[in-house]
Length: 524
Image (cartoon, rainbow, N blue to C red; front, side):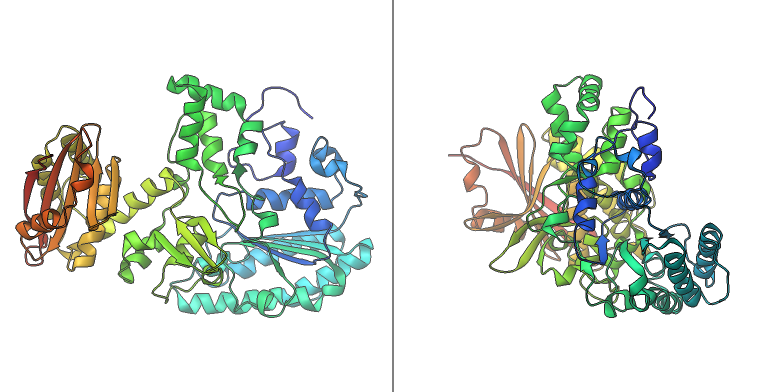
């Protein structure tokens, strides 16, 4: 192997290249051993984008090619594996957008051409399914070893056409025919490992293979992708030190920054908290905290679905469901939970064995900031100004104890909403207000529960606390009266900070913040 300074393999998904270049690599080969030491023949793993699925498939690829030199010093090298070479067929479907018919066939035929050339197989069939079957059987016959089949993003043609029924059904039928070979050619196959975003039960890979092992929620494979805290500390001490130096903070504070921004994912009932590997590698490479994962994809599909079904955003981002609710992907459903989980905007926070329910929430600060910045224009789209300018004005005035000026910023923002995008119901108003308040970056709580009721919004700064009650087509006096009648500020009397009680009224006629009333809490 090459020696020298270790590099962060940003965007590198080839295991051989990473090892040959002496790049940073978190050893995941223990999970390779769990797979090969098992009697299972078929595996499926779902994870969000940029979480290392392709790299793990690449690791499996070189392992079954018998290239032991690449695994020196790793866990798998300590096992009694014989390191025989197997015929490996890797099917990467992540190379096209699949936005028109015919693209899948072109991708498959190109891949099949390379396999036939490699194993000296004559092309005797034109159809993709028959051609694939012939390759599997002949590769086994020629090498004397059963075939390894690795499928990267097996569902990419479907995910890209969720809103295009005709294309979706075309690609579904083509993939179903292709994957049916996993069962019909089982005698020639040693292992099938598929990765993707969702488990589409309508595909033959799941409907025909009743013995497929879905490790998406498995406790034994919860850490197979991503970086655990132990792995972060063991592998990236120098990078963390450089981040601390650049930020002029202590090593422990740099860890806290990494944790609050990139940790918080969990994929199993008993799984570890997982750091987003893409974001961590970028942050350590640049010695800078940034929104790296958000820059790799725009969740327009997520935003459109939330808007279409009229989702209550606050409840959507803090919810409960069963494991079965998270496996399918159906855009016609009024429940966005599965989509949010599979795309990485929700993750498992806890599991209740008694209720057999997962508690889901937003993983970390990076995801929350990126998601809300993209969602905001779907609820409030201004003709002038930007969300950043609005947020800056709100933050500044809340910090300096000027709630009236902060509300003026909000009023101007809502007043500038494009007519076609204007808020036309109470749910949209609460969603838009919730997004704005969450984006300001201060300590903001929504639906804060007290012994007397639930405060709509509670904002805290170093010197001030703001209790805000929202009313739709009612007066701000009604909102303020509810705060006082319910004694929402009673638990703050011992707090040294100044407390403002704010009633906000939103009008369905003007579709804007109509008025507000502000009162200082008199402490006793």
